[in-house]
Length: 168
Image 1: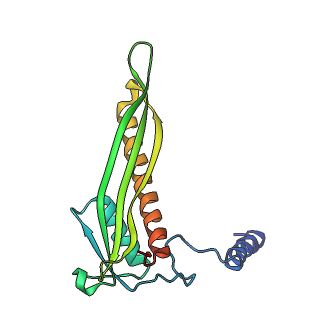
Image 2 (image 1 turned 180 degrees about the horizontal axis):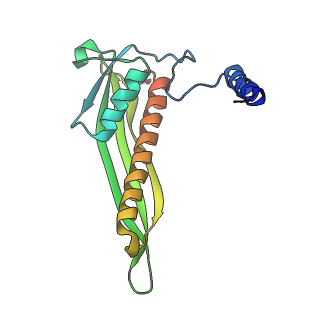
């Protein structure tokens, strides 16, 4: 490696360090949540729930075993992934699908005060479809749903970060 390449690499590393660049999920920014522990209540261990647990641990939120041990209880009310035909060709073949991902959450403290009233996180994507590429389109659909799930987890974390007791 030439001296110029090393100098350029060092310069880029210093530039990233100087602009406070850090990886997503890295909580060195001092972001503090208004609670210390959380109980995650869900009807099943879906991919969303597993990703949310992992992200909470990444943000140094203690996951309690029971609601009594937690400052806050987050309830995952629903987690749905659906698709709908968006357009058809003249011969009646599917040309486009619209994919939907919706998660409904609610957060309450031990005194049953709402921190986050029941609310939906919903998103959609449009996917072109071709009968000749069935396997590729199935993989694309799975990737789009995974991307929407990751976005939903990030939105849930941001909402929890801003959560506070709601006036009743």
